[in-house]
Length: 188
Image (cartoon, rainbow, N blue to C red; front, side, top):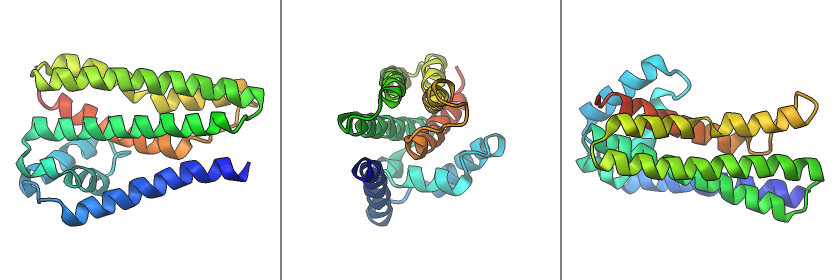
């Protein structure tokens, strides 16, 4: 059991270190656009966090030449990476042969994160084509993956159980909410 808990933590550590490394070597963004965008979206969505928004977007080298649509695309790419990390963690946990109850819950989580990846890919194509309303629809569908995963553990368990993916879910939820909020500012 100890070996299975370390793998998701190791993924989180690798993600964190990668983010810090990218922050130190990435090109600077248009500070005004970045700060205004993050201030605007975090005013109504306190769960994202202003500093998290700025640091996450700034970590991508594409930020240097990004307009607001580019920032939405960066956040969507970060969401794809987060959903992929969750799928990887689920795969590792499943390989560890957990009890049947956990296996069922992990199966639900795998399905919702897999669907989130599909939704995010469609959202990315719509962003690229300037179809912002359509992108918002698909981002909205993806944003619920962590809650749906957590619900599976609560509903199939004793009502208070949280999933072993809570950390990955929180990180994914923040970047996906960020992608949705930025995209929503782009209009139709």
